[in-house]
Image 1 (spheres, rainbow, N blue to C red):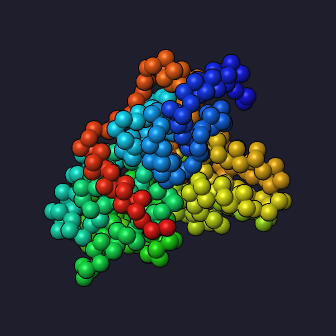
Image 2: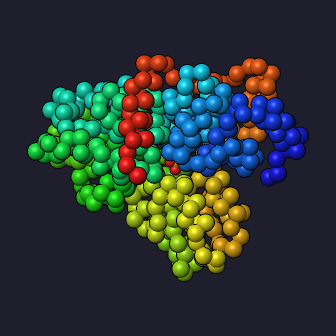
Image 3: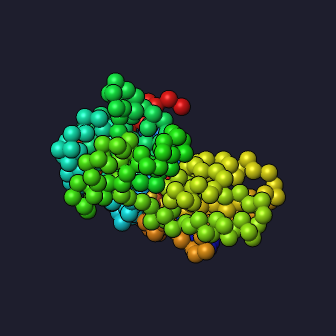
Length: 359
Ligand code: 13P
Ligand code: SF4
């Protein structure tokens, strides 16, 4: 749908009034009406780097979800203010790992005698206090662009152990499993799932001893919906179709896909694809629709029978963006995201380890 012209004009005027004091970041899953005002767009890795790269901007308006705004606050200087236009823009996956639950799991691993061999790795899609937990305990943050490099780094940290390291991967079991099996060549049965609702994660001492990947029982409610039978259906319907999916999809969907990668990878792949090719994309619908609109010479379809947006990403709409920007023009900072200094210091350790990874 076309954006309200009055709101478009107001957003434009507010941006012009704020000039260089303002930097607007937009995640690829944002609505078109919002993305048109982003100074940069990107996946969560690129946006984290971009936020850190603008020390002169007084206000960082983050069009994305809460954990991304927290990461931007951690990576920018204390005088810079990070604003999330709607505070209800959370992430159901990030909410699946709470600090208390992770600390309980960590204590249980100590009781099981394995904690010294475990390196915690958290996906960017987690709260700042989970990143801080990783920073305090020798771990690292990763994104869907660098999960394999982060896992290699984590295994190297314990290379001197006779039985090798184990990874506690938070909070997305699918990204963890897909990376371990498809990128690192691990066996499926070397991955176990830690269920925080079960005593001892629901795992026996023997299962814990044998595991190399302990996957937290979390998932993305958007990517978890894609199914392998729709892949089969589309292959029947469009011979020669290419299936391109995000690694937050389930392992059986990823196994059936032709290409797997982060949102930046998905965009670059479609840009490089020859005219006339046919693609089904398994990621958030705002991005798939934008790619279909930008590439009319290719056939691009959504890998789901139903319309399915990320409801929390979609909470950032033009009215919220205009409100946040006009408030800044009027001298009021609304919806500022601040991480407390202690959490920030520990989370920065884990984020910096990620930014220092090779590649
Ligand atoms: P990336 O931006 O790392 O591809 O992650 C996708 C996602 O689900 C963000 O919320
Ligand atoms: Fe969270 Fe999934 Fe939405 Fe990303 S797409 S913000 S992981 S619920």
